[in-house]
Amino acid sequence: MKQQRIFPGFILIGFGLYFYLQQKNIVLFQDFFTWPTLLVIVGAAFLAQGYGARDYEAILPGTILVGFGVHFHVVNKFEIWPDHMGTFILIISLGFLLRYQKTGNGLFQGILFLSLAVILLFSDKVTGYLGLIEGRVGSAWEFWPIVIILIGAYLLFIRKK
Image (cartoon, rainbow, N blue to C red):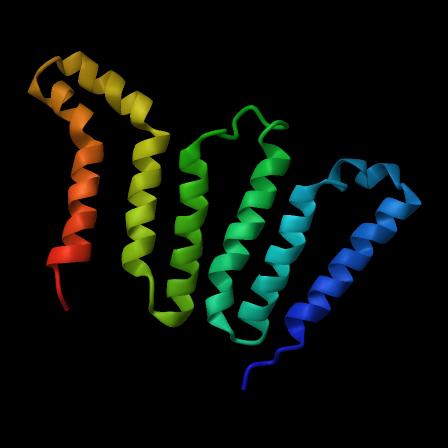
């Protein structure tokens, strides 16, 4: 039986601490009084529900919310952190892979999103390498979005289990 009190308890404690610290105006936490912190609190509540109450379907939204919240906190603080659409897809793939670890569902989606994130995050480097080759491969690289569309259409309309 799943414990339904973990998620609301964690939300109330997290929001309570957030608003208490904001009200006391503690300088140490000044940078955390933003909406990404609220994403992290809600995501952490989902993760606590997922792992603490063995409600493993809550792992995916928890990972996504914590990941997005952390991303928005650190994207302007660390120059090494990528501010790219591929980062969001990488966070989503991490959610699928963590959920797969507990449920056995979502490995295909996790690997698919991970592959797409790697392609997006490193496409400029790959394009540079292909530019060195200057041949058929370089011009074929322009059609990779169409290949993704065709694979998606195949999965939706042709492949039947």
